[in-house]
Image 1: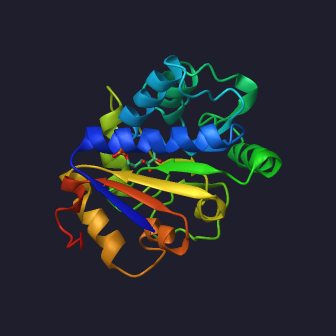
Image 2 (image 1 turned 180 degrees about the vertical axis):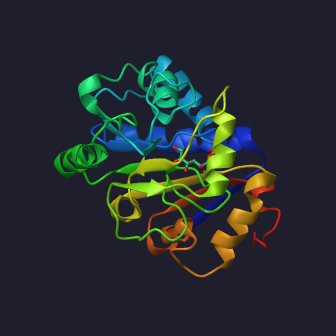
Image 3 (image 1 turned 120 degrees about the vertical axis):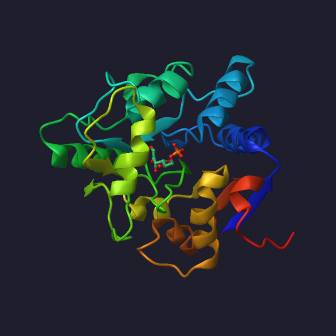
Amino acid sequence: MKINVFENYEELSKEVSEFIIERVNNNKKMLLCFAGGDTPVLAYKNLVKAYEEGRVDFKDCKFVGLDEWVGLDENDLGSCKYLLYKEVFEPLKIKEENICFFDGKAKNLQKECKNMDMFIEKYGPIDLIVLGIGVNGHLGFNEPGVSFENYTHVVNLQDSTKVVGQKYFEDEKKLEKGITLGIRYILESDTPILIANGKKKSDAIKRLLEDEITENMPASALKLHNNSHIFLDKEATLKINLKK
Ligand code: F6R
């Protein structure tokens, strides 16, 4: 696990976007997976700017969604699908056939899982995954206690995820379950990247870096991967002792 620490969120986001651009320029047919949430948004905006400047093109890439709130879809402002279409797929002009995303309103969620697994089986393994971390250590919606062996699955969300998740929505939402790629996909990917910024993430980052690898800390799975990268800003490292 390679740890990179930057002065602030802007520098961190610039580095993350340049990291992605370099890899996509080296392999134009990547299968990419981008998290929703607030953390990666500036990196996504940088990608769009680079695309508009002609520095990178994602037209031959395929994309899979990382997760979605069960009960929500792209018509719900704040859903993962809404965010990814608005910040990434639409501005980068990604064709629909190159995207596989969860429908959180689907009646048959097992079918959603199967569709995703089939897409990844066809085009995978995933080349690059961009992840955020929950204050409880979750990756995607892989909550503490979830097996590292899972592929796509439906999970019961923990209270902290339900509470923190309200920040994405104007009106209070009933958030009970999530549908998510499992840790197994992250471990089988070529390059997983975790991004975290701000004091609010400093406890989770301390636990990730200092504690043992355990399913109770899903992000610790990244320590099992020999090409995982963590991009942090200084505030996220406040509670740890990083040897520089
Ligand atoms: C969202 C996702 C979540 C978030 C995490 C951090 O698609 O997968 O795991 O990455 O909850 O969220 P933010 O970035 O809003 O702090």
